[in-house]
Image 1 (cartoon, rainbow, N blue to C red):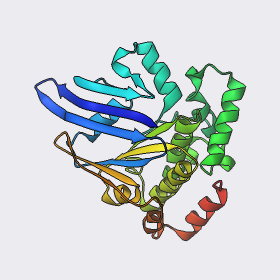
Image 2 (image 1 turned 90 degrees about the vertical axis):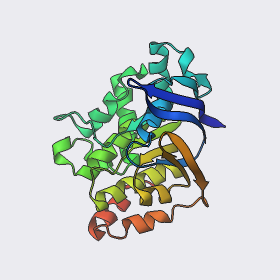
Image 3 (image 1 turned 120 degrees about the vertical axis):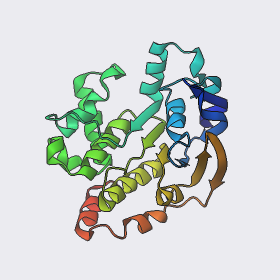
Image 4 (image 1 turned 180 degrees about the vertical axis):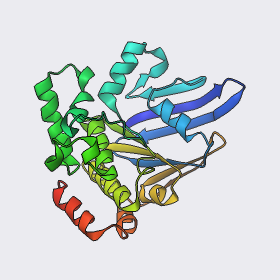
Length: 251
């Protein structure tokens, strides 16, 4: 069953800049996909299409079987809230606010009360190995921990699809490895994940690579469904930090 479908999608910006040129893409439930390409290849525009943050110039985008062009702004917001989680290169955490409430605030438009939001937030932070950091504020957390809070915020509502835009771009190798381990665990638990990246190692770690160049898909490759690539990406991580993370992370 597909979670996202793009059919003959184009996106043309002012000045006749063609960011996407007739793209066809289907992401099936349970996939771990890398959308990869150099700067200017169209991968950020692809993220905006999949995430319903922008509409195509021509073509069709379907998310959870909804044609996004037929939805009102309010309906699009509801679709994003129910079906999509976002993780960006920048953490976008509120300073002076605890990890628990940073995650809970991501559920403000879910229609549930504060107590229930905090319960979901605590559960999400446990899932990313931060159950012992609920009361810590962003300035009391490492970069990797802040990104894991951002991941927890994205998955607290249990969206079918998680979109991660260069999720390790602002992190050192050890912190990046922690975040990838978290994403691998979420995928193993059933979350569909699409990672937008220019990093060839992260792309190779994913089960499927969709390669973009000049607004077109130039390759769509799959490999055996395993996460052994995590070992390659984490082998240079600090042993004490890696051990501490594994102890805190759920099985």
